[in-house]
Length: 339
Ligand code: NAD
Ligand code: WQD
Image 1: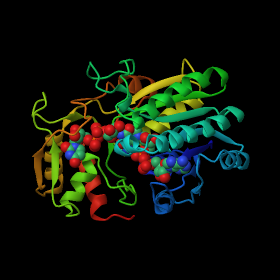
Image 2 (image 1 turned 180 degrees about the vertical axis):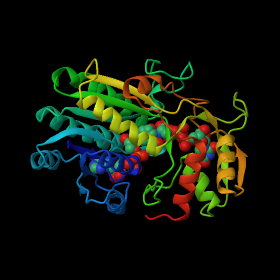
Image 3 (image 1 turned 135 degrees about the vertical axis):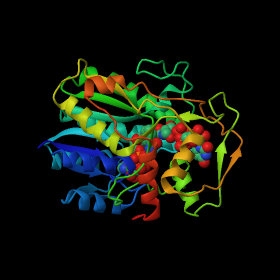
Image 4 (image 1 turned 90 degrees about the vertical axis):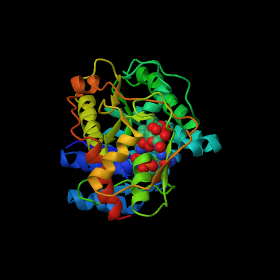
């Protein structure tokens, strides 16, 4: 039973991934300072898996405390590094804070990975590294464009740091996972998306509007060159994403990678427009959403969706959930939020 360190384990994707890891036989410890998460997330993960998950509420930017976790758990075989700040807008207003947290935390973790010759390191990257891609669907070799925000740059830097560190860490297999648009919640209703900041992503904005927390919502742009004029994205259910992490971890631990750095796209490979997402919500929730057609949002790419064939072929990953499953579970979570 390999022991895995999950950073950002109380966060949205981290908490769902811990459930999947434990259900598939891994032992997990977490580091999360709750900058953007509730301690209840870890309590509820523990309820779902029927065992106590230990979280160290420390800041990854504190190199000494990070080192102590590795000294306390010398048997850590893999690290899944989720912990980062993720608001595109905040990163534009305070880039130093973003660089310090996301790069500083990652350096401290990578230092311990190198020191302890950890076998597997999985990094949360993002489709944001592609920017406004020239070709669709995007493959892992689609060229990166200059990042649209300091946040996006922290993901490009993170991937590049791995490329530079990998040659001096021959015992470690590094994997960067480029998520498209994660959404939805665990079917138990015990964990879901619950950022401390005001939600700006489409799915929580829809569910909060339908639940009366917002009077109405705006569709950002209706005159794009797409089938209905609204932007297209690849929405991926958080439990399919969690499953991909476990599969990537197994791939890295078993040394199945040809090189010690790999990159995978994680999306379902289908583009869904904003209006199609709203229709899927209205159908699954049996409600009518109060929305208006509004102006474009600055910085939005017109359309992006993944070619997921590399993850399917090499990891054996076959996401099974679509936009209606996403809306059904996100709505159930919103109606009975536990934190
Ligand atoms: P989240 O904010 O819910 O989770 C991140 C967790 O990391 C939070 O619980 C936060 O408290 C913790 N954290 C941040 N900085 C820390 C630090 N210095 N020390 C200790 N803990 C710290 O975010 P998420 O949606 O679960 O995203 C997880 C990862 O996936 C992030 O790296 C994010 O950039 C990336 N990502 C997210 C999305 C998305 O849309 N949710 C898309 C692509 C990539
Ligand atoms: C989706 C679509 C909006 C809200 C962001 C980050 C990206 C990655 C994933 C981390 C867009 C439209 C939204 C609203 C709307 N995160 N929308 N009304 O922008 O694709 O990606 O999260 O790495 O880096 O930028 O996601 O959920 O904000 O938007 O019409 O109130 O919904 O214009 O077309 P996005 P999103």
